[in-house]
Length: 225
Image 1 (cartoon, rainbow, N blue to C red):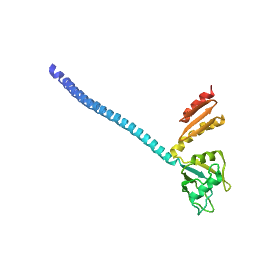
Image 2 (image 1 turned 180 degrees about the horizontal axis):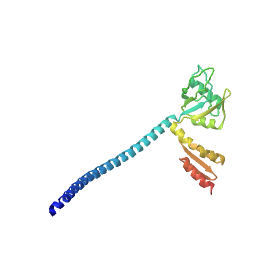
Image 3 (image 1 turned 60 degrees about the horizontal axis):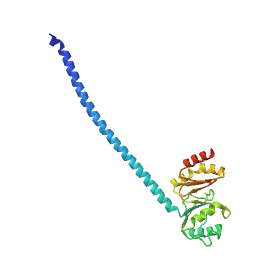
Image 4 (image 1 turned 60 degrees about the vertical axis):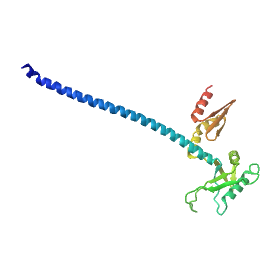
């Protein structure tokens, strides 16, 4: 009688044991899969970090090589459009005429000169003159320095001269504009060197900064001395 009365209970217990064993096996299997997945995820994260580092290095390397190849170039803006003239001879004569014999005793030797591609032009809606790209054999730094210190005029037009930079480097240099404005207001002596390093002289102290943030931090500390 007792055995008959507890048989259903025993059957329930046996069923529960089987379910627990089944859950245990499934849990062990799930934990093993989770461990494998975590290991794979860790490996994937390591691979991604490595690829990101390689990509950053290669991007910086390519950008550096691109800017090195542009070091001999100057971009000259606002030269009136003219037809039928050899652009190399035209720019060589223009530079000598506008900058004078102190900069160019004779017409500079140019490797190439051309206007950058522009939009469609019409008589009724003329576009601004296209930018002239000029590649020097040498003296490009001398010409750029002179243009920064003087007003360059040609046929009544004021010309502007800029170094030829990659988009990435131009953005990096532009990031210094805010701190340069603050230094200008303080009448501090500063210069942005190639590729993007800011040298500042305040009083007897001279510092060089690779990032605008470092320059801002230093200037804030110097101002509160």
